[in-house]
Amino acid sequence: MSKRKRPISKAEAKFLAEYDASMFPHPSVAVDVALVAVDEAKLKVLVLKRNEHPDFGLWSMPGGFVQMKESLDDAANRLLSAKAGVSGIFLEQLYTFGRPDRDPRTRVIAVAYYALVTVAQLKEVHVAGNGVRLVELRVDWKGERGGDAKIFDDDGKEMPLAFDHEEILGAVVKRLRGKLNYAPIGFELLPKKFTLRQLQTIHETILGHRVNKDSFRRRMLATGMVSATGELETDVSHRPAELYRFKRSGKGRSR
Amino acid sequence: MSKRKRPISKAEAKFLAEYDASMFPHPSVAVDVALVAVDEAKLKVLVLKRNEHPDFGLWSMPGGFVQMKESLDDAANRLLSAKAGVSGIFLEQLYTFGRPDRDPRTRVIAVAYYALVTVAQLKEVHVAGNGVRLVELRVDWKGERGGDAKIFDDDGKEMPLAFDHEEILGAVVKRLRGKLNYAPIGFELLPKKFTLRQLQTIHETILGHRVNKDSFRRRMLATGMVSATGELETDVSHRPAELYRFKRSGKGRSR
DNA sequence: TGAATAGTGTCTATAAGACAATATCCC
DNA sequence: GGGATATTGTCTTATAGACACTATTCA
Image (tube, rainbow over all chains, first blue to last red; front, side, top):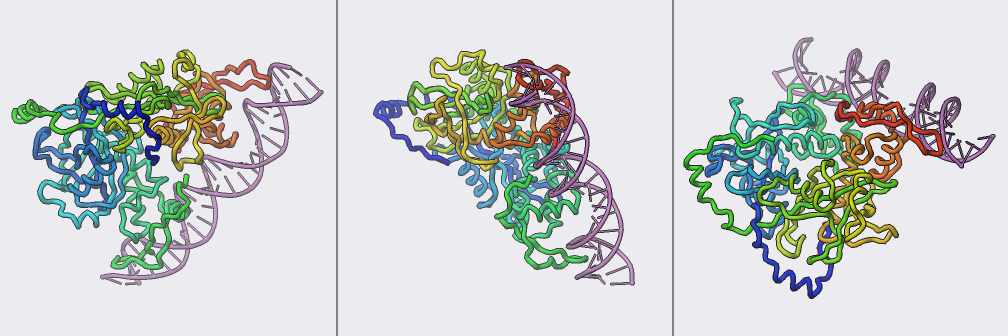
């Protein structure tokens, strides 16, 4: 936001020139990104199979160390591009995890991010091969209570997560649930044109429970964030629903 | 939350023994804590006058580098004890600020925390002397839009903030406003027994606007988070209000 | 007694949940 | 036509805002 602006005095300049950052030991700082999508009423997250120690063979979110000259946001975007082949998507910082023993190598402080993407965008990328998988993400708690999350393969078998990624993914779900009702994040998980029923499914999937159809519809229309296109969906074996489009204007938060 | 539990293989043990954390340069990691109170319908924050470079003479929140063997929460608590003399108070991580140029010395990533305290607790400490001040915190935006914050001395004169602390303090106010209506944070800013009017003033001060008296009262009682003590306030020149106590039980979130 | 704020009761507007009725597509 | 879902309308309930009225303390 605000950039540095104050003039630097001579004394300050001297101090800065003599400053030695290596005087005391530093932790490493990593960025981990949870790339989340919703597919067929299931929450999905992208994970990689670790092919090096520590936690060799376990699954983890894309992550990597922050470079000295890039911002945290830039680091997160870089990782998304490099490891998942997506860019320009919704990305937000979540929380910073710093338990001293969370990584056995050395002290690693992880700034966690989460990103939202449509399944379509993700399928352009080569997922599924070489240790990259889009797997189901589930939590066993209701509402916004919080707690760990687990991941499951297509057969419903739990997959082991590396480091403290169960905790981080749990925090992702908690944030999504909390944010859903006042921020336009559902739209990030849908194509440009969508039906209100699809949007409702997104909400229900994230919240983990059904919502009332009538009031959901009214609520969404009342926010002013969606506008009808006049077009109808096709290829459905029932009355086609109207397609809507996300309208950035809206009333903003709708509490 | 979850602690490490997986067995470590021989190969992993070898890898860990040979791992050298100093192979590439690391940023420094600092923790900055905004210690917030409400006094006479004004938001207050504790700031220190910097007596070294950089930003010598400017005002900053208590902060310091994270030690290699302490968690981020521990670091924040340590700073609160050392620089403000308080402990055991509400403390929560806010956001991590990592612009590469936010500190001119070297790359410093700041994990920001905010803490809440009653003015009474704070006055036990020796504030006001030696460059420690409790000053007014104001923002010029409404609702939860977000933006920078400024600080002012008792004469209403703006005081210059060091580094990106305008941005950090703005994020603190934004978080407080967002959290106030579903989390029991108002109570952290009041003594054990308080009147509903006092609680309302806390809310109004944080939100930056008046709230409806009747519905505020109803809403608070409906949450189940307050219980009447039967006692009345004293030394007021009007009908005394009943004193209430915070009751942890409540219904939880009250959306 | 008057000033000031506490606390209660009532009315209205709004939003959510429940449910029924009708519309429109594919098969 | 039958199955399935969309869309609209109505009723009920819960909550917030507005306002009036009474209560209680100190000066």
